[in-house]
Amino acid sequence: MKYVTIINERRFEIEVDNEGRVLIDGEERDVDFLNLGGSLFSLITENKSFEAVIDDDEGRIDVMMRGRLFEAQVLDERAMLLMQRRGGVASASGEVNAPMPGLIVEVTAALGGEVAKGQTVIILESMKMQNELKSPIDGVVRAIHAEAGQAVDKNELLVEIKAPDTEN
Image (cartoon, rainbow, N blue to C red):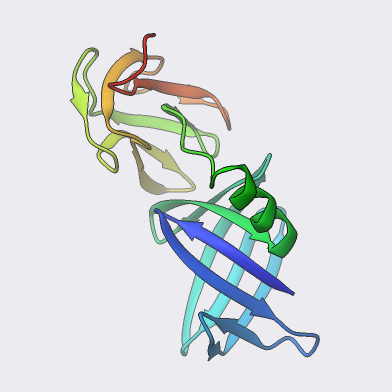
């Protein structure tokens, strides 16, 4: 089966055949992937071992690995064709949500302040790791729903960012 995966606006073509071989952009990769329970996974590739927390939430896949959060979109061939016919992959919203339960360590964004796409707006501690949550778009911070020391649940809205070309 072929998939298109989009991570930080970079597109990867991934093919997994019936024998478990993985091709990424046409290059074969040695990958061992194991679910350790729930959303925790073990990944071994290129003689390196990684643990990752992977959460699929209504088509948006959050991957937390080595203290970094990656938002991914994975589309199979049919879904990619439909998206292309509709005018492309949907753009990101201006919401920053907690990818997992944790404790807010620091809020680096300021209400009314400008932020650039990819700029850290919240630092969340979860599973004894500090994770930088970044702005998904360029814009102005419209609302902050969290403060340092606050415990948050998975998917809780933390920061709202308004794109420069929107009314609200």
